[in-house]
Amino acid sequence: MKRTPLDEWIFQKHGIRTDDRQAVASYQLERIRELIGYARSRSPFYRQLYGGAALPASMEAFSRFPTVHAGDLTARGYQMLCVSQSEIARIVTLRTSGTTQAPKRVYFTRDDVDLTLDFFENGMKTLGGSGDRALILFPAKAPESVGDLLSEALRRLGMTVCCEEGDGAVRRLLCEPVDIVCGSASRLLGVASGTRGVPIRAVLSSSEPLSEDGRAALQSAWRCRVFDHFGMTETGYGGAVECEAHEGMHIRENDLYFEVIDGDGRRLPDGTPGELAVTTLTRRGMPLIRYRTGDRAVLSGEDCPCGSRLRRILKVERMTPCR
Image 1 (tube, rainbow, N blue to C red):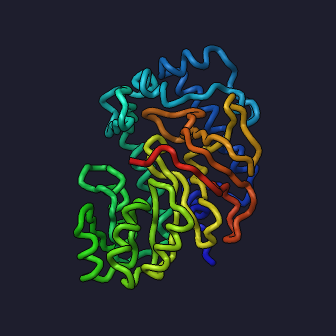
Image 2: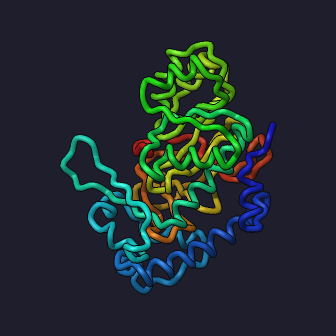
């Protein structure tokens, strides 16, 4: 069983051995302290939220900081910006289906987008590499959309990539050899139902909940390994991805700090279900600090059977699809 490639990626990028959990914790706390100081100095929203509060001296102290929620993005998202509008490379608008509620807008600098691209490139090493043929079922026409970024990441790994958003996916799989297929759970299942028996080596499911029945259906149709991924627009799309152990999704702990919290924003122990909150440790355009995702999750700090000590998302009820 191969270890998740995220360990080596984090070491090469930041010099942190993820087996040393104290080193990871120290890195994250240092980033959080820098981030709070940065956001408070540049963002009217965070300046008002934190006032004159001292920087947290520990993760426990940080867990008592106020949370941010989706309503803040809707009402005051522009005030969360920490850079000028000219530095923003991408704006994603998230609308709540079936309501008249104002949309949320999430802003990214060029460097913020590159963080996601870097994670996609390294996280996908578990599924394949140079010479493989990949089919992307995510929308990819818009520059720097999920499908576009994932396509670029796989090309950097030396893969041949094609994207199909419509009925062409079934025709392509029936006519051309493909090693890896990436898409939302519902899209994957729809395509798999029309291509049973086609040999696929690996599948990445993201943006929607993947049930055990859905995983089994994909494995039965394509005789493939199925890897789950958690991400959402607010996290910069990428968040956490399964390794070959298939016992939870390893978190990109160099870029994101996840907590599970209760209704009052208090951090819950590992293994306890609650609401997932995220802090974007390295984003500069529109950082999110203790942002309540609305998703319910269970986290684990136990060692993974693959050998990694990166924290994992064991379970998640994804209430907010990635777009």
